[in-house]
Length: 68
Image: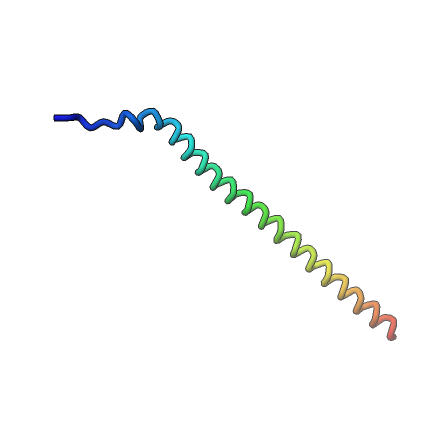
């Protein structure tokens, strides 16, 4: 009776573990960096919209005061 062993893959176990951990770390870093990017990008868009709204309100007030 022959014994079935996995001696061939035993030497690769450490390497495969490191590759797996690298892939997991890469996935999480992409997720974290994209989340930070979208958070910062959304704030800058809202600030720009507020600035445009304030400028339009100011322009309307100036036009109304000129027409008096």
